[in-house]
Length: 246
Image (cartoon, rainbow, N blue to C red):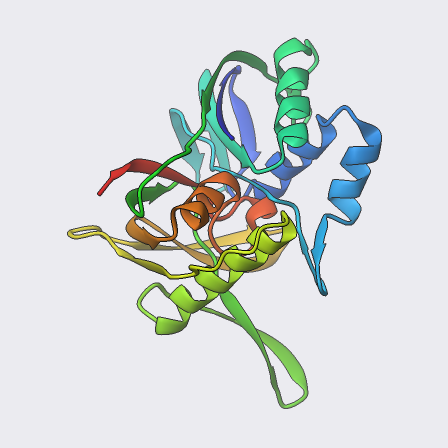
């Protein structure tokens, strides 16, 4: 399920790199304490990997950038898209947002003024998507005894491989074994992709945004729309929106 949440604010000022703040806002507004702690501390396991099975977008709305102080200010209204494969997560978070009069982002009051729900089922095997937050794929290598993170570009063949393998692991976490595991992702025709460099709690994360053609098993495409493409989804990366079927 994907929800577009519309907020009213009064000059909401945030650091330019605010992903960790929005992540904290989401966790803090999951009312069920046991589920919140499970999701935050453990997640859904697949081997040594843990998946939170949710993602979120950047904030969208009219804003001003203060380059000197490295802040971004949303004047009056903004929206946040949250996607998850776990209905308990979405229902709990949305109910809190809708019925709480004390919502705060970075200690600043905000108010929900609308929610739009999108569920994509029965989609075809080829769709056009756009990123609502950058897609991240990476490898960890050891060089001279030190671990180093290498981020991959959509123009690298390994990018598609990581996207596919990540979606298959997510499908296994939710108890599905997908036999037809074909998947391709490529930049859409005439789309200009952009590399985004984000700091998440002082750690550099590199991702890519733009419009892509995604083709493969329709169930894998539904999972991608449900909880994101690539890695670091619960940190606000890989949130996508379907533009249309192709």
